Every structure is written in C-alpha cells, then in structure tokens.
Image (cartoon, rainbow, N blue to C red; front, side, top):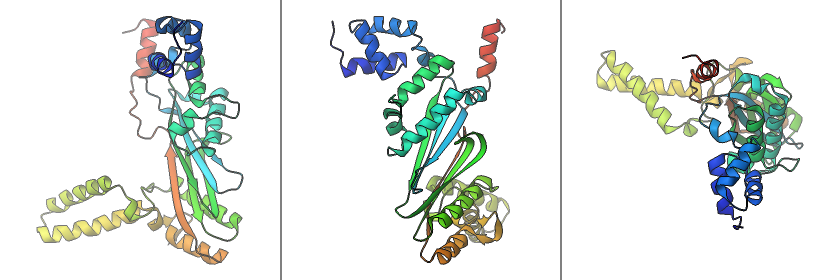
Length: 312
C-alpha cells in the first residue's frame, strides 16, 4: 500500500475537484492508487465538481455578519449558477456558516476556505459536497472584513433573500469614542447610502482611488476636451476641473448624503463626533453586489438545455 502523502491527496484533489478529506478517504480505500481513487470518488458522486468548474457561477448570495461586540463585520459572496439554487435552504445555510467562519479568521477567501465551520466541516469540503448534491458549480468568490478598536461596524442588506443573506450588502466602520448605539446607527445610515446612491462610491478618499481608474477617467476627459476645439492649455485646465468634480462624485466622504443632500458624508461624520463628544472617523466601507464583474456566458444554460433535449 502506497503512503498517503499530502502531495498525493493534493494531486487527487486537483484532478477530481473533490474535498480534501474525501480525497484522503478515497486513497485510503484504494491503497493509494490515484486512478482507482478517482473511480471511487465518481461512484460516491464526489468528482462532479471538476466537470462543472468551467461553468459561470454569477448567481448566489452575499451573506453578512456582525460580531457580538459590534466592532467587527464580515461579508462573503457565495456563488452558484442559478438564482433557483440561491433559494435552496442548504445553500443559504452554507453562506451563513461561511460568514460565521469569516468572523473567526483574517477574513480573506483562502483563510475561510481552509477553516472549519461550527459543525467541524472544512469549508472547501462543504462547497464540494454541495456541488455534488445540488449539481451546479459553486464558489466562495469574495470576502471582506472590517474592524474598529472603538466605535461600531454596521451592516445593511439590500434585496434580502433570507436572514443575513441578500443580493447586495454593505459594511461601514465608524471609529471613535462615545455611545456605540449612536455610532452604529449612523454607520447603518451610511451603509444604506452606499447601497442606494445613484453613483456607488469607488473609494473612501481621493487618495484611495485606483490610479488606473483615475488615469482612465483623465484619458476620457482629455479626449472630450480636445474634441471641443479648445487650445491645449485651456483643455488641460478643463480636464483638471472635471477630474475634481468626478472625484467628488465617486469618493464616499465627498458625496451628498442621500437622506440629507445638503450635507456630505464627511460633514455627517463630523457632526456625529460632536454629538458623541469625541473625534469620529469613517474607517472604511465595503460594498458587495452579487455577481459584480463576473463574465457570465449567456448561452451556458441554453446550451445545456439543448444538449439534454437533443436540440442543436
């Protein structure tokens, strides 16, 4: 019998798409023979994940949790192929469990995937088993975590699909002394703003904007100014003004507060500091919209139906 090494388990896992513990068991059952272990996994229905790995998973849920002390919050995006599966109780429970795990880890996808749920199952194995059971490709795509030493982290779920799960979720962290309930409520209102404002913020401050995004906007504004026929020196001044205006539109602290457009988010935070009797700062925010940025192939489902019905 061959020794069941970590490298052997890793090799089988990559070939089969099955969970680590399932791969180890398969190798133990087959004396370390990888080909026989693949067959063993297939008979158990655990090698299905590999066949589905190239199918777009753009539906699903965003799950959010706030720690009991109100100072830490997490979001996880758990994807499947169809919104029908997103309504499945097992899928929703898994998303909630992954959010709970995120609270106990660094909050990144790799750490969550390698950790265990409250029931003792490794997250990656839970996903693999769900794929085998439900029959759709799934993945834990994104995760985020915010914490404060003092203050509050609040969560807003938009278009909720059940307890703690939605299609859009926002976390906001307010750091500062004073009444945590007051800070938590203001953070919740800012989270609602982030979810509902017509122009979703790209960064907390101008300095935190992605340089590539700024360069792209500058390029667009430069081309627009030059096409207007203005002299270059005037065009360049026009561009700088337009970039400043654009930054005010996409930087959270500079945006008009949706509940009071006469007040910016920055002014709201300053006012909150006066209310609680200490300096308050907006430490960060995270906005996760389900499927955002996923290159979903529109013909995936149609092609599968055609193959099942004998159509072209």
